[in-house]
Image 1: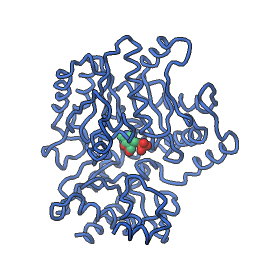
Image 2 (image 1 turned 180 degrees about the vertical axis):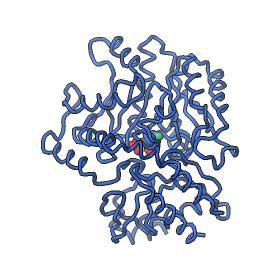
Image 3 (image 1 turned 90 degrees about the vertical axis):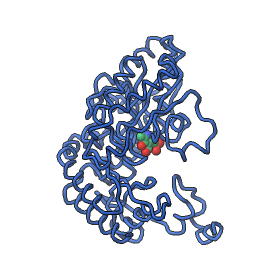
Length: 441
Ligand SMILES: Cc1ncc(COP(=O)(O)O)c(C=O)c1O
């Protein structure tokens, strides 16, 4: 069967697609030709509403003139510059812009090219920071079940999505996981669940087991995204912050999805009023136009590297494409646009409407849960004959045929429209989802 498919689709065989069932896809491809505003155009000429903002990254939709022009201009001026021992002015300007938007004292920016690299960078900063302070026994890292922190070995070690881990050996040693703070009490919550903050106390138990003085960092997505949008119960993140602070453990917020407007603020940290020690970002940093990530770092950490790092290289880490001029130009234009369009305010104004729309869709009897915050949501579909993803994968495929791009994650379908979406766009999502649910049955 697999061989037949490969023969039929010989012209597609060379491209080994990521996180995609290759054989299924190549037998029935979904191909995107172009994008403008809030819509993709498929190769068969259909307009498809981008209900997942690309892959949570195109927060301002597509083909934004200011961003496109900035990239074009930059390509003709300085197409590449190494960041090892050299710099280019815009990289410093962007760092100042980002530092000003980050909460509290997270005033220093380390550039990467993806969310995965941001995570690896943050974990390495955490380990090296403790060692530089003479606290080198802090070697353990704590993540969370169901967490997604990209695909590097650090990220899959602290991450908790089983398929992303199980094929890849023993992973990093010294890693433990907290439970996902979610249970039946929180089903169909409106925004943040009222109950469940006590899940944070599980961290104390894990710390007691390992001795807190051996733990370097705790990493969480403030709102879990990739495994199906799980919103933290009220008080949970606050408690994680208290516990980590009490024990001298760094707290990393992985804001690769939540960063830059998804929750109506530049960061989830700002929305929840919590200052972590490091924030990882990527995706909407430059509207997904050129691969880029950035880690925002607390001044105390940066200061430690500068004070203790000697006269040479203070941090033996970086990428050929760190602060790539095209990515930086795109990010500067994107950040300006966020401000000009007051995009965060749009999310704050419409998130109630969006949440009601999601609950409206979730009245369908094949949906057993709905979760949402800001402009991110997930619907959990009943399985057909107890088979995982049986209904959700049909919904995913059918939605595309009906002109709506959504994101599939096991039995969950995530919806995260561009943050400039208006009420009429949200209404369109509802219409197309309802049609899709009725088509699939
Ligand atoms: C929270 C989080 N961290 C890290 C990543 C990895 O980002 P990338 O795919 O750019 O490596 C993602 C991607 O979805 C993410 O959601």
